[in-house]
Length: 398
Ligand code: NDP
Ligand code: MG
Image 1 (cartoon, rainbow, N blue to C red):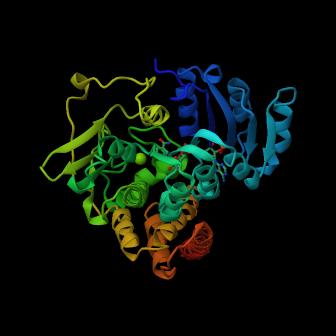
Image 2 (image 1 turned 45 degrees about the vertical axis):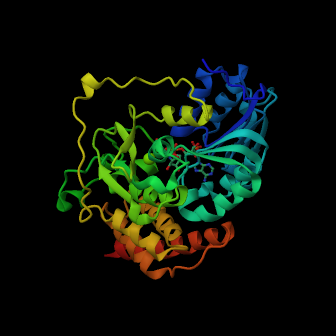
């Protein structure tokens, strides 16, 4: 097993933001497989309100700091950790302060645009930022990359598609890359007609055929807004233009994405659909370290299928391309309106197909403008949420 120590032979200081979520738990699992507290100095672990899970993890990993974004969880978290050496805090500001603790490696796995400010704090304080959260790149990609450049931090994409591309992208020959091919599972409604999709329930949308993930991203996989966000994320992460990025539906989720080169070669990264592989890749980088995942058995896989996405039933990809072409603040408005619409769908206020309608209506109304800094993104995010809420209210009354 490769040791958890870095090249200098020192123990690594590690934080996990969003430690109680799907990616957070997988990250802790990978750390556990590499020695846990015996091997790493865990600095900060954060959650929103899941104080019990957070406290268990803080004790197991001997964290210095445990923080809940939800202030109402403070007392319970404090009581659960009384008698230990773990420092406790709560509130959105406290999450940013936790992210600002100096580390060698920070996993950013907070769901949604709530991750924006902590992501930036981590970019300033961490030598390596393992970024699972996609909203940071979508809403403030250029400013985030600038922040990392200034701090000298290394960004490692964890989202499985971008991690796959990162693994097979020849960074010494950018000009030899012809295209990026993002794979999409197609979600649970790949074969449904529009009429059937209009009737799907949140419980049905929360059943992903291949991946076990948090609720928001699972709904996004069903609408294909997940791929829309990833399309934008890829455009900010890699030195290619939007028209060099393709999306292909691949229902088996074995090929996690591909890079096509000028000589016709296509390099793919494959594996079972388990986020512990990209997490381990980010943890070990630039070396490879073991991951506690099932191995791909090709005699069981038998078939790898690929098909064109149907943009009539899944307009999310068209909206992503349009938002990227409009540029500036549009991707941020797309993300914010989608977050609000997904909440409204899960709360039973709008139908499944209304999600894309709310996003498109919001994009038409929020004028695209140049984004200079993180605070510009936060303003656009707030404005798009207000506009999306108004459109949802209209749908509710209809
Ligand atoms: P989950 O919903 O499972 O977990 C989200 C984590 O963030 C939890 O720890 C949650 O705390 C915390 N959190 C939620 N809201 C806030 C907030 N307002 N402030 C601070 N913390 C908050 O999400 P996932 O793990 O599925 O996804 C995390 C990110 O990674 C997302 O951006 C997603 O798009 C991305 N991603 C996820 C993949 C997956 O396989 N799950 C794959 C690729 C990318 P609590 O538990 O207390 O609610
Ligand atoms: Mg992904």
